[in-house]
Image 1 (tube, one colour):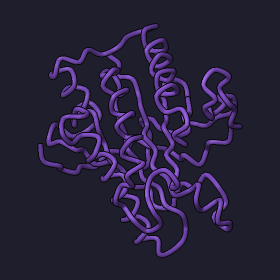
Image 2 (cartoon, rainbow, N blue to C red):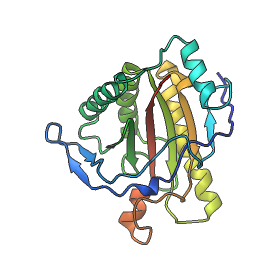
Image 3 (cartoon, helix red, strand yellow):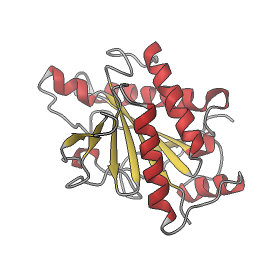
Image 4 (spheres, one colour):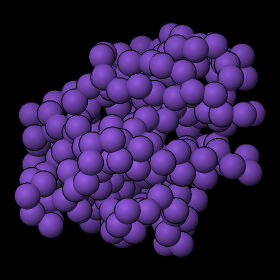
Length: 224
């Protein structure tokens, strides 16, 4: 399917994340402590997302497309257990990769920092990032009742307009790889670039800017 971008508001400030990071005792993976964690994504005002397919525009259109593809929606108590199992599988498959896994209610966020993803001022995927994305794709395919928002972020170096475009290119590169060669169903995927608008660290330091240069994959359950 060809990529056709449409407007949809589904993200709110990722900068609201203020919880501490802890280490999972079983996997050694960094895990975001849910206590005090703000809303990262949801059906609120925010970014302009692009669909990877030319299906009906809007969140309901994505749901309709997935149901039409034979992917059933989750209901009730099944949602939490489904996302718990998915989170555990991601912790196992991404152990040692440098990817941070955050949990916010029934949402899972994979935070991929700059040292894992892209070189400075580039949007071509690094070889070591390919292996990470392959692991991500395998786990995503084991949990088809999850929607996928791929969101690019930049630091504050350079012009706002340039950083916006760079964040979009990086998000598109990740989404494009995930959906290429049949790895992940394109109907599941949205793409967004947030530019420098949602920093998670201090842009006045090199370390902070490195944290802000990231790609996040936001996973939400497909519900009725």
